[in-house]
Length: 309
Length: 299
Figure 1 (cartoon, each protein chain N blue to C red):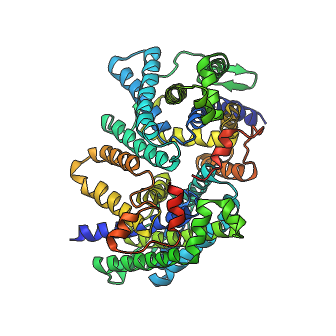
Figure 2 (tube, chains in turn cyan, brown):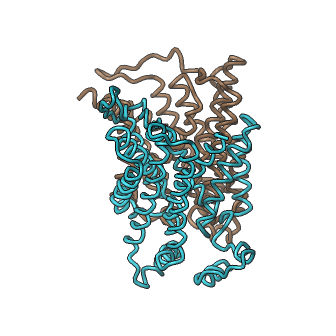
Figure 3 (cartoon, chains in turn purple, red):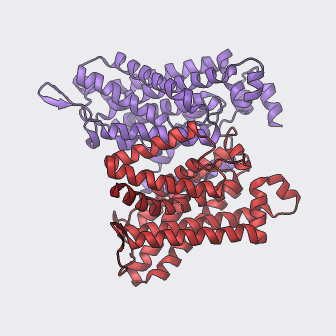
């Protein structure tokens, strides 16, 4: 049973990571920096709870705020470049963050042992959950409450004016500018929100695994982060969730019985999915789902379906 | 001061290999307008094919070189078919995600066939160390530099003197115009992809032969170096790719000497980040190219 809780935790944390890239993707920007924000979010609350004995809730909120602050600062220069150049710039930023933590050694003594980030060895003993008597299912429920709150917030945002603004910038920057939207503010805002969500995810991740090291937060994780919303589609937040379930639940865990051949099949299935649905599993024009559920489309749908034709 | 000059010399040699990797990227990007994340891993397949030939048949340098080239080209053809030819031209992100999946696939395939951490690769043995007054130049570096120079000269001839070169340049200037004037877009794209793979294969061979040992990490390494060098130099320009490669090589060599290995990595990425923001047109500068405009387009 613990296995399934563990899997649910991984899926929850990766959903947060994917959602952080989703917000930025809505404005048409592809950011590979999400793994960097996730790393900042992992180290910061790890330090807060393990080194200074803070409660988990303020710790992960602070982690989110720190990540958001850095995302905002990085956003201003980085978002001057677009498209592919932004991919590379954010990739560079993510790697800089990783290498920063690779070189960071800052340990304090607590209860007779040294805790804190220790360079290449990583940050050990982030034992907030076991020390405070949290059981595995407590942690799992906690993670999914956070995921649900974030998803609900994004869902609500998507249906409000903010969502329309983000999508407007994502669809056509010139048109968005001509109706008086401040492109820089919108993009940096999305980047900041993405940074906050990635920070939350990273903070929770650090506490579930208890040991973090720089290698985890590399290009691979950054690519996973953007692959979730791309594969899931930008239609709704559920696309990202479905993609995480598909990749982490089915492709990685479900195919574990295939042993080492899994990675080969993994590649083939992603290629197949991208070939069949280049705009993602739940694309921006995913009317079927809405018809099935009997829901009416968003206001922007007419515009989008026009563009599709 | 001597150290500085010595580092610059070493950096230029390594940088020429980076320049080749960047050239491969630039060719693919110029024609496809999409990023091939699996470029490095394709080269990895080639290098391991060469290493296999070397360890099983104790083959000499030339068969190993040919095997490296063949491996890289075949792996690249596979990537082209699945991630580029099969996906609509305007779905740049889908191609990127899909080539990334193939990256993992190729890397895993290599790791399955070659389970050890590192393997030996034949080196240029018996070449004397060159001395230029107080400076030393490793013979491998000289080979690297000269091969890169010869390859660039050859590429220049292909691009400017052959019909294929004309088609390639037309295609990278304007895809629609190329199609209208009767260029077989799909065929030229595939050939360009393979040409880029061959250039990458040469770069991979030179790097592996200089180090003498290889691991599966080389795939990601090659993708990153090529990408960084291409972007520093300026997207879509051959000259930019070479200048970017050389600049990256020199900066890395200096940073390695003065700041150590981890300092080198941070410096590389900081250079990339700053270069992108302060100098988005790249070191080569010059006129706005179609590819550069495309790179700034919404993905």
